Amino acid sequence: MKRTARNIMLSAALVGVVLSLVGCSSATPTDTPGVDRLGQYILRQEGPQLWVVLGYRFATSQLGDEWLILDVNLTSPNGQTATVKRENVFVQTPGGSKIPLATQREFNEAYGALRPTLARAQIDRDPLDYFPPNRVECDLKFFTVPGAGVAYDEVTLNNFRACYGRLFFKVNGGIQAGRWVLGMDLPESEIRIPFELGK
Image 1: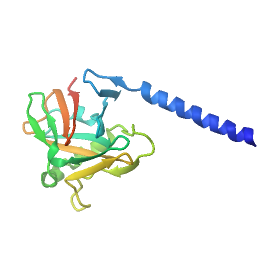
Image 2: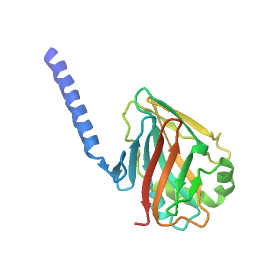
Image 3: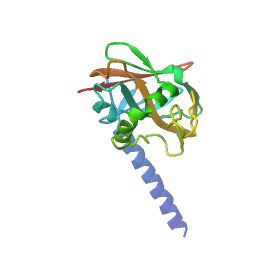
Image 4: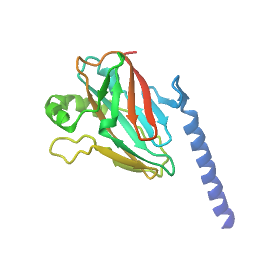
C-alpha cells in the first residue's frame, strides 16, 4: 500500500517536471527583451506587475480594416496585483501613431457592421492558456455585446486569476502592414509587445 502511494507521488512529480520542461522549451525569445514567442501568432511578456499573452492570428487577416482586434490573456506574477485601465491600453502603428483602446460607446456604434467580423474572429484564434493552472479564469470586460451586460473601464489582476478577452482599436484609414506594438502602462511598469502584420 505504501509502495503504491509512493509510486503515485513519484509519477505525479515526474509528470509535473515533464510539463514544466515542455512549457519552457516552447517559448522562443524574440528581438525584444522580455518578450517570448509561444506560437506563430502568440507572444508573451512577463512584467513585474503583469503577465500578458497576446494572440494576433485574426489580426493578420485584417489589413485594410478599420477595426484591429487582438486577443489577450492577463494575470499577475506571484504576490503581485495590477490594475489595467482602459485609458492606459493602446497600440502603436507602424508609422508611430498611438491609437487608444476604443470605448464601449464606439464599440456599440460599430457593432452592427462588426458582427460578421466578430463571427470570423471567434473561429480564427488561438488558445492563450499559457499561465500556471492554479489561475481561475475570468472575463476581461473592457467590451461587451450591446445589451448583454456591463463593460468596465478597468480590471484588477492578481496571481489567483487570469482574465481573457478581446481588445478593439479603431484605426482611421485602415490597418497597414508592418510592426505594431501593444502597450499597457501601469503605475510602476509597462508592457510593450511588438507584433508584425502583413508578413
